[in-house]
Length: 441
Image (cartoon, rainbow, N blue to C red):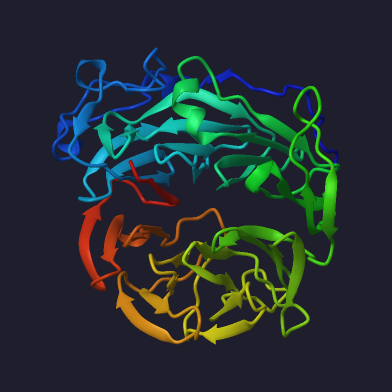
């Protein structure tokens, strides 16, 4: 397969040119769809002079709220839906063509929408400005900002160590920016970036570390083999990096997660590769092929939750076991839940609990240290994972002590209080939900 050529452009400042149908109606709000306490505003969607600070609302300004206003962002076949995370009431509908994915931008306000040739910057319309020992929170109308990072097969987005890294699968290029600068930068374009391009394009991932170092996957269009540690950027253009360390004992490297205060892991087809304290360590699977390609980490735990698949030839394996890897000790536990799950089923609770949404419709809560299931919470009807990975299936997203679970079969969403173990809210959706993320406001 011929790899796309990379045009040198250290900083992209792109204004989106959406299809006519989308540009004509980027955002439509109805009075019944406004979040409680927020009046429905006018149609918004084109960038303005206030795009970096106050999205258009009533009178063109956002309103101050008494506390942060968290929101949820869901994708569907017709675009993006925004919900109030506390009430599950609809806030906005944003038409957008094609299959899209959503990623947190890292600032608690913006979401990056991946659509193949770009990472589109979406403003959720909620944020908090800190002033010493207190903050002022605001809520306005969500909108596409009209800004985007150009991409060649937009891939993984990872926020870590106060930086956000965007990986281009089609070129191997990584762009990195400070998410704290995003709101102000959007007034005129995009934030300044540093860039690195892998020697070969591949489906990869990059993670920034404290001090500006970078972990990046190794691979090409024939396969992926491991990780490299790169130095902080140097040189006159601030783009040069030197390779400090590498490990190529991770066939099929995929995904990433962070445990505790800075341990980074990626999954392999025969285990998990751990970067900790300046060194790589391999945690091997007990099976020759034991893939841990999807992971979920927690700052409250040294243990990484991962999936576990053992059939290399399966078109779609429906595993019932999960993996728990202690990054401090290297210990691995395999736990059989008695139900299968999907790559959108993994999450972590506020105290580091391992959360798995099973195809039995139950949210399984597992102690990551012992592997013992400590709670099972029925949430949705039983479901079956579709063979096509882009197709909707129940998705799990955790924000604070609340777990949100989508129910595509019924076009619903449910909020589960992880403290009480109860479903405390359920909401009807206008569309069949696919991917799910959120912002803290």
